[in-house]
Length: 224
Image (cartoon, rainbow, N blue to C red; front, side, top):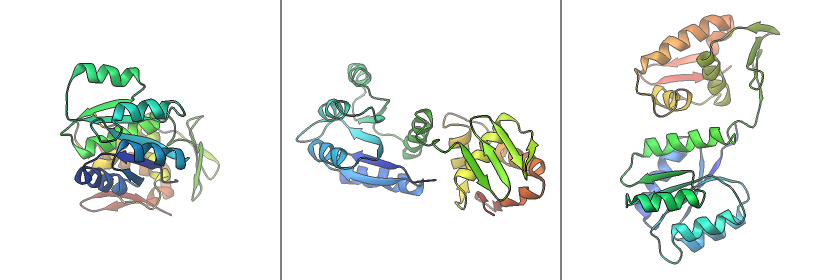
């Protein structure tokens, strides 16, 4: 799957580094801007930005101005970051077309999970509808799975889990990351539910189930 590009805009270099590090670990490409003017210039230069993480309080051009300028050209998803929890700010953000609004301090893991959820919701992470790997064929639109041409009946979560594995082939995936992406970031259950679903999925895939490798103490990797 192609790495999606995220523009991170914040005048605090430590904040940009914190967000960038977590995004890079989650397989995103990241470009940074230290003020609003630089952010608008980068956005207009780079035609493939999938989402913007945007601070409000910045020199030269604040987050509101950046948002207004971007919205003149694009409906790219925007997550606003702010040190203030003022409801009026939040309402203004949504009126300008902001997709999410996060108050500092925040958990970088939650920020990444929200980014991934927004990209799924806007279908930017789901452009490829047919997946093929080692005799497994997945039609995401029809919600069908075939192994060597034979249909396989999977539950909804088993299907979502298989799609996630196939879209991240060859990448080590922690249980936490799988939970964030397949069960969404607001799931508070036991991570062992993943092991149960993986066991069932392997069984239904037959010999192909061996393509789901266990990474002891961490999670799983899907590979031929």
